Image 1 (cartoon, rainbow, N blue to C red):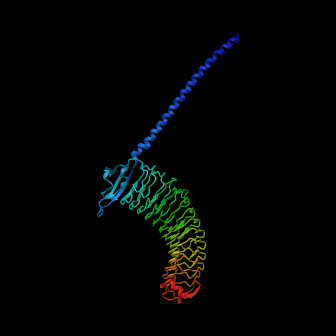
Image 2: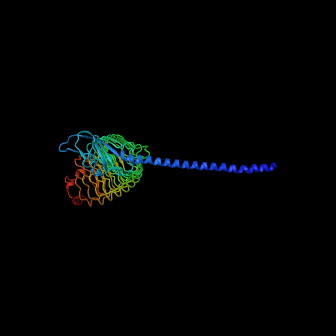
Image 3: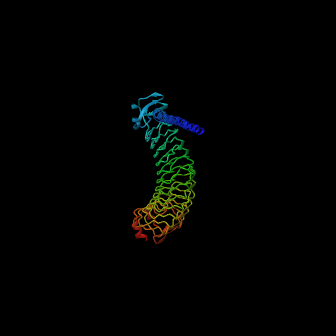
Length: 485
């Protein structure tokens, strides 16, 4: 009997547990449904927030505030305030907080400090030449401008020679690839922060600060040049720039750069420049790179890989404070033009470029001209078989007494005017393999006014400078062969 009661108890308990499990299952399903609904509502809310943030706000906040310092002008009553090409993108405009007629307003005739607010209809993809040659632009605020779609700011402020301040705010440069000439001729700009350019798409920074004559400081801390291929004229004519420190910057790279021509030209206050970390493997053009760096005393470029460089003309010209230059690692196997390479390096006393491979060089004109302190030069191994012009090559090298270049073979030489003109202290010259068969211009080849006794070994003939006829530099090259060889 007890066994039966126990069986009944067990049988009765089973349905009770099943019913309880069912209730719990239903409760779990409802909970999951509620969680799912909550997640969907959250997603919708986020979408709405994002919409109003990036779409609605873009419409409300997509504007620029520009300040113009306007003064009365003779024969000119209006000042340009933006590029007419952008007229179709402008939704509204205010001048000194008063609504303006955008269809008829691309310039103004106000006087004094004038504030212009320009609101755009949509996100712009380019800011190229937006304020090109807006000569009276004094200050610009870009913090409310949406730039995440912008790909180029080339020439954006080119010619804004009164521009002093640029407020970038949270300027989005992620997609920008071209900033060439962005601040060119902004001759009143004193300080620029390039930390905004952190994207890795930037390729062209040609002429970025060209002729920014008041620029004294540039912040490069996060400036990203990993993909840049053009650095020509970046600092050209920055005559007041006293320091450019590019070492220790993790993103300032030159690995892909092809053009460095004119890069530091006329940076007249730079006294020291350390470019040891520059990767120049792909560079083709270095002409005028340091031309006009008159205060430069210390230049560290020993690590330069120049195996692909083709142009080096005027590379160090007018570096009048340089007293030494280590170019022992230079590979010049592909260089074609060396015209004026060291011209006016007036403080240079010694130059060892015996390692130079000059087999492709066609122009050596004025290469060492006006190096009037140079008293020792090693170019014994120069290959000159393809050189066509040597005009003024050693002109005014007043301290040069010994010039031994017996391996100078010149079968292609056409012009050799002023070759040694004004090199008045020359005592010994060895040009035994000099070939002038194709020479057409040979005016003032030798120095004039030399009172010393100088021995010239020229094309197999030794003669004394005092025995050279006074009209030697004026007669036809063919007569030289006839009369003196």
